[in-house]
Image 1 (cartoon, rainbow, N blue to C red):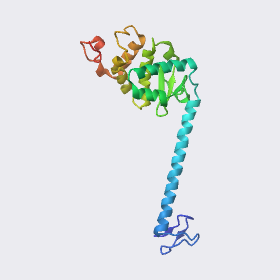
Image 2: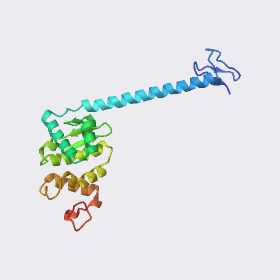
Image 3: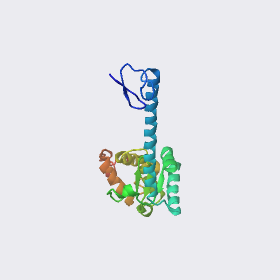
Image 4: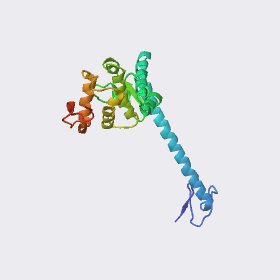
Length: 216
């Protein structure tokens, strides 16, 4: 069993206490301390490289798409204010404090095929892309708030099923009910998407559209 110097890598005789080349200790507390120090340095370097890579990836996403203009930002803020007034405290914090909004696809979103959407979220980078249909088709701030509520769940890391179910179960709290939005194209579209994602919510024959969350 020969001893390899941790400093200069010279292989020494098994009985040697110090390295014949550099004089470094080959065993004992000093050798162990050097090994721990070398290990810690490697860990620190790895963490720094990983952090730099993640930071660079984030900025590449954020800077490859345009931010919202003033009118678009006002529309987003109005919908978030409505969510706050309805008691969605956690979701409002995510949407207001952590999300970075963009008005077009970043390079990552642009590289992936997707269906028509109102918004998209890049988790865990908390970048929310707001598409033109978000401002064009919803009837009011309530419907825009419902869309942002869906994206807030993605900001938490939730999948599509969880996001659809949360929004659909929160409709009454939000004020986005069938009674008030019976002719809403957005409500109809979201109902169909929710039925596909969470079919278990639509097995109540006594309620309109078989919706188990609809109160009579």
